[in-house]
Image 1: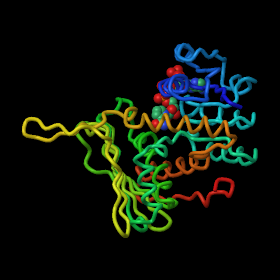
Image 2 (image 1 turned 180 degrees about the horizontal axis):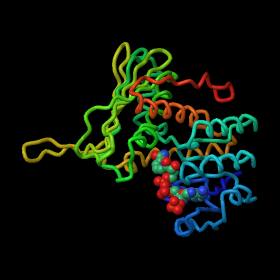
Image 3 (image 1 turned 135 degrees about the vertical axis):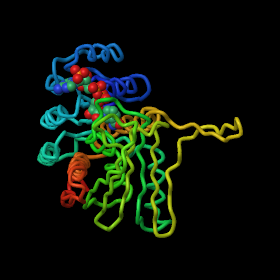
Image 4 (image 1 turned 90 degrees about the vertical axis):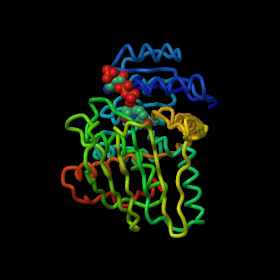
Length: 335
Ligand code: NAP
């Protein structure tokens, strides 16, 4: 196969961005069919790539000219489409979350293992970000010793009025949840949320900022500041403190401006810009690996781990305690 013929389920914001990059920036993939319950979105997507509009996810999956599926509908609809793809034996890239509950993520894991071959990649694009890859190389190279602590921040200038306290875990910290266990190659065992004083910029009822603590099997302690009304920009920080040194993720590069007796460097203002290259590399890697018959990248098991960890953090938002995370070891299938 020299070209991957892709069917897209969900043609909202990120679905259309992926369609645009597959059609105009990447190589080896062609979007041939799209579907969305929102007809306007499906039409807009079809206008970007020329694909036909199918009536629903199952008709996309079962189209003979669709080799692989890309799922970017809203979270609660993901698992159904992914399970349809597995039943048809077709590779599937699923935007995060893999499913909206840990139990549904587990159903996907079980279905994929029963099929006997990895078909699912989950859209945790930070694994393709240069900054995290550089950190991973330093840590796995062993030059600064074993990790002991990780300090992270995930800051947004502002969020939509419908953003909730729970979304700080499920929509925001979920990216740290996935990237950090991969970065330090360890497994989470507990999760706690500490609630500091709330900013006056948070809408009534929203708890912001939040400090999330994850501990791992080997005893590494991770702190993640989630602050979604920080006012000043989109700011992602990660510093790994090891036995023989520390490694801090490089900041996005902007010119240093000297003006009015100060030195200033710009910050990103939104996540799309900060991770645009990572999305391109991620989807290109998915196309390449799928064409070569091997699905790489974050697995359905990673999607399940993220869901279980997020559930423990949400539970701790209510209890204030450190909540256990019990996933067991990864099945050999996913190692
Ligand atoms: P969005 O703009 O709301 O798009 C979702 C689309 O799916 C909408 O057109 C929605 O229709 C449609 N939809 C809902 N249920 C459906 C179903 N059963 N079958 C087919 N289509 C359905 O949302 P988005 O921002 O693109 O996000 C989509 C997914 O990508 C979410 O899971 C989100 O978490 C994820 N995401 C990931 C990243 C990342 O960094 N990896 C970034 C952004 C988004 P309506 O308009 O009628 O609701």
